[in-house]
Length: 339
Image (cartoon, rainbow, N blue to C red; front, side, top):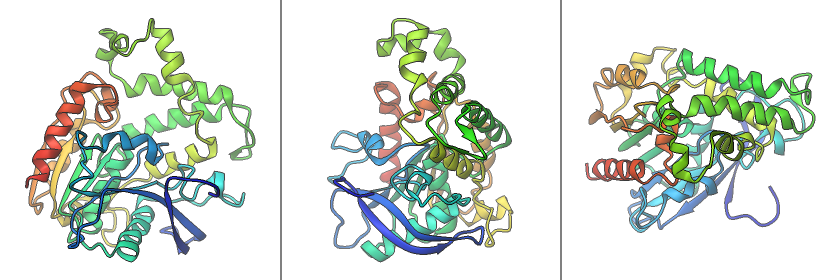
């Protein structure tokens, strides 16, 4: 984490994780956009998704974007295991401990309160793993979160979602570079296998049936798979990917001492305006999980479920170069921020 960079580091010190393990000199990488107002109440927290680093998600931020830095002070905290915050790739080589969303939110909370003096969040916005973090924020800090937008996310990792991640892990760790529980070199074949598995899960049956990949300029299905998926995860350290998969699979807002594994109790703690935006054709963050959660958000200021009407599967919630889905998200978030 040395050299030139466009982000800051919050030095959290030695942190006792949820597991009881002490993580020495834990570091949270983050970037801010816009200006914090005098009341310190115009803050939008925008956590990163699986394998993403802040610069890959900031396309959403702008005067004509979903999040406007002219009005809001936007903070992107990089999730542990993404290669910028503490991760296997930048740690001392010892086995990387199990980290949870609860651990991540704990350090994000310290960043906001200790560095910026923030006690109120106008919005927590997140897609996928970012959406799961938004849910955790709403449950763990109900007095602090005014609004939360959960885009293609859920309050916990559903069994089907867990199985999907098992297939991703199996594809990646099938590479001979994986030995004794870790990768000792870059798993080129494993990256490709992971990408091919992911391509089938992330997009919908309709996406492939309608050959929507042509809209992005791909000339054939194989061209799409090669250029869009084969090496999409090769930009990340393979051990980092495993660390984040573990965080994802352990995700559950009720999995802490405060809630004792009682999801109903955790959901009824939430007081924010809650906007659930699942993708209609998302295969692993299923609409039905959000439907089930919606009925339990009985103490939220408001709770609405507006599925994204798209054939882009899970990627409907991250609509880079997808104007229709982007317009849907922009309108939904604008309405939420008006509440």
